[in-house]
Each structure stands twice: as structure tokens, then as C-alpha cells.
Image (cartoon, rainbow, N blue to C red; front, side):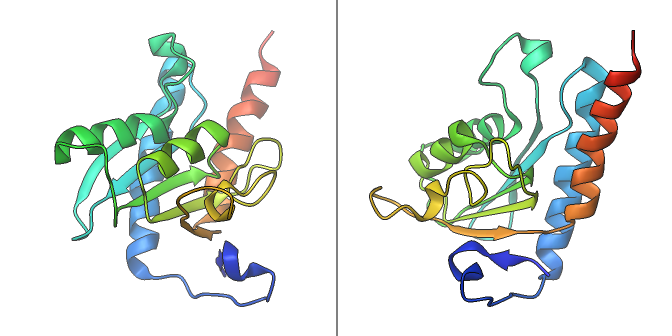
Length: 169
């Protein structure tokens, strides 16, 4: 079962909401598009306060030649453009993989209320694995973190991508 990061220490587990499962499905679809242009399969979705999908993106670092073209950052940019402002209070960011420090920082800067992710990233995760920017009391904003939504599928996308790359000469 997925865990709300702020509650993980007390072993409180929150059941998966069907909407989160469906939204992660959209993020997984996005992630699946990234390898077609050589990018790591990570997908992100931003959902508005009313449940409307505001943006769906996947990694585009390779195709754009842009080190900041992570799925989460691109989705946040698109959502802000759609809403006509940078404040995404009450919105939810759904990512197939735990956001890195840059993406978690962008979500904080955008005032995202909740970050949902599939698989943890022990090497670069900034929402509970390596760092926990979303609940750091020294920052001026915090986010609810929900992890483990369709974790096996999200992890398999990444694992298979890199396994295939290792097989290439």
C-alpha cells in the first residue's frame, strides 16, 4: 500500500484512491513515449483543484538538449501556462518516479499541495529517499507526499530501459 511520507515513520498506511491509480496510468503512458527519442521513461501529470488534468509530459532532455527538461518541470510549466499563473496551490503533481531535487524544488516553488509518485529513487529522490524537501520545516512551503502508486510498473519501465541500453554496443 502507498504511504504518505509524513506518516511513514508511524507506519500509518493510506489506501490507494482509484483516482490516483488512474492518474498514475496517465503518467505511465507519458513515460512510455520518452524512449522513442532516447529519454529516460519518466512521466508526469499535473491535476487541478477540480480534478482536471492540466498537463501531461514526459522527459525530453535528450530531444530538447535541455538538462531541465524533466517530465515534472515541463508539466509544471504547462499547468502554470494553462492556469495563467505560477501558483499551483491545491494542485497535485503525479510522477512515475520520485522527483529529484530540481523537480521537488520546482513543485515547492509552484506551491503544489501534493506530490504522488510511483517508484522511489534511492540515488536522487528528494521526496523521502535521499532528501525530503516536501516536508522540510526550514522551507516556507510543504507538500503532502504519497508514494508507491503503481510502483512495480513505474520501476519496471526504468529498469527495462536501462537493461536494454546496457545490451547495446
